Amino acid sequence: MSLPALSFEQLQHYEPLALRQGIAAGRYQGHTSGLGKGRVQANIVILPGDWANEFLRYCTLNRQACPILDVTEPGDPYFRNLGNAIDIRHEVPRYRVFRDGELSEEPLDIEHLWQDDMVAFALGCSFSFEQPLLEAGIRLRHIDLGRNIAMFRTNIDTRPTARLSGKMVVTMRPMKAAAAIQAIQITGRMPNVHGAPVHIGDPSLIGIQSLDKPDYGDAVPIEADEIPVFWACGVTPQSVVQASRPPLCITHAPGCMLVTDLWNSAL
Amino acid sequence: MSLPALSFEQLQHYEPLALRQGIAAGRYQGHTSGLGKGRVQANIVILPGDWANEFLRYCTLNRQACPILDVTEPGDPYFRNLGNAIDIRHEVPRYRVFRDGELSEEPLDIEHLWQDDMVAFALGCSFSFEQPLLEAGIRLRHIDLGRNIAMFRTNIDTRPTARLSGKMVVTMRPMKAAAAIQAIQITGRMPNVHGAPVHIGDPSLIGIQSLDKPDYGDAVPIEADEIPVFWACGVTPQSVVQASRPPLCITHAPGCMLVTDLWNSAL
Image (tube, rainbow over all chains, first blue to last red; front, side):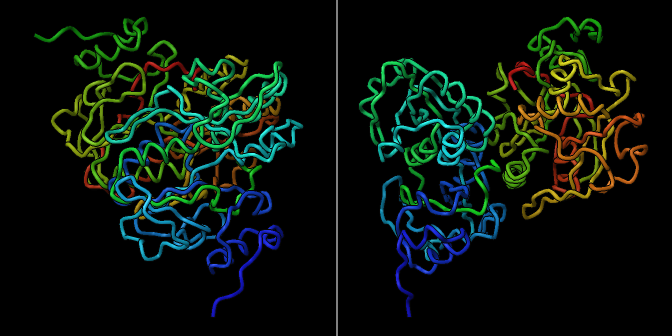
C-alpha cells in the first residue's frame, strides 16, 4: 500500500503543499533545511490544557525569543494562518515527545497522541532572516562552512510566568562592523523572526564564557576584525518548557521543521 | 479620612508612579490624555478563566489590532512588565464592567470584583505613535481641532478563534502624500502600537461608506490634496469581546487609561 520514499533531491523541487503531502504520507522523514522553495519554516510546540495557556503567556512576554506565527484552538489540529490549512498531526517529518520533561519517543506522526485540549504553536525561526541577510550580500560563516549555527545559553533572564522561566538562548554570527550594522537594520524589521540582535560584542557581558564551546550546534571561527552578533533563539522556549517538566509536550525533531506556505519575505 | 481630590492641572506635573498612587487613593477619576509625562498609556481588558485564554489567542492572531504590552498570571493582579509593579485593581481612574456583553457599572476600583482566575491584559494604543509623528513635524488634524480621533468599522475580517471574531475597527488620519509616506515608515517601526497602516486611500475599498460619519469618535475634514490613512485600532478587541458576550469582562472607561512607566519612544 505505501508509496515509495522521496529523496531530498526530489523534494527540493516540490512546492510546500506537495512537500507536506509527501511528508504526511510517510514518504520523507529527514530534515527540511533547503526545502520548501524559500517559504517560512516554523518551530513546533504542542501542549495540552493549562500548559498551553501558560506557554502562550510566556511567549507573549518574550516575543524576541518566542515569536508566534500561528496558534490553534484547543483540540483543533489545523493551523489556519500559515497558508493552506495544515494538519499538525501529520505534516512534520519527525516529532519528539517529551513526558515529564524527558524525551520518550520520536514518532513520524502524532495522531495517536492528539487530545482534545491540545494547542499547537508555530514559532518563527532564524532561517527566515538568513535569506534576506544573504540577499543583502552578508556572508554567514556557518553556511559557508556547512555547519549548524552556534547557540549559547546566556545570563539574560526571560520574563517568567508561574511555572515557565529561564535564561535566553542565543545564536551567534560573526560579522565585520559594516555587515553587523546592516544586519541589525534588516532583522530589526522582522519582529516575527526574533527581530534585532539582543547583544553585540563582548560575549562575557551576557554570560558566555567561550565562543569556542557553544551549548548547542557547531562553533565557527571569528576573525580579528569581526564582531560577534547575538540573536534570541527559538531554542529558548523549548528548553524552558522542558525544564518545567509538563506531563506531555510534543515538538518537531531538530532540523525537521514545519514548512509553511508563507514567504520569508512576507515576515 | 479621604485625601482631597487632585485636579488635572496638578496631575500634569506628576510622574507616572505618583499619578497612579493618586488614582489608587481615589483622588482622581478623569481621563488620562496628556497625563503621565510622555509615558505609554494602555488599554485594559480583564477576563476570567477560559475567556482570558481564548482572548490571548485572539490577540496573538491579530497583533496589529491587539498589540499586547503585558499579561498577568491568572489571579495575579500585578502587571510586572510595565515598570513598577502595577496593581490593576486600583490604578485605573475608572473602569467599565460588562456582564453578558452589557455595560453594567462604572466603578472606580475593582478589588471587590477580582477573582483568582482573572487575567489582565494591557494593550498598546495609538496615542503612543502620535507623539513620534508630531515630533517628525506631521500635523494631526484631530489634535489641531481638539477632537477625538475618528474610528470606523471596516469589512476587514480579523482572524477568528472559537468564540471571538469580527471586523477590524480602524482610526483615520488625513495627511498629504509626503506626510503619509513618512508616517508609514515611522509607525511601521512600532509593531507594539498597531504598526504600519492597514489601508491608505479609497475608504470604500475597506467597507467605509462615508468619512463624515465615523462609528466612534469625531469626524475631521479632509482636504483635496490629502489621503486618508487608516490604522488598526484597539477598539477592535473590545468590540469583539463584547459581541461574544462573556459572563464578565472589565475594561478601562473610554479615555481613562492605565498610565505605565514605559516611555513611548521605547516602543
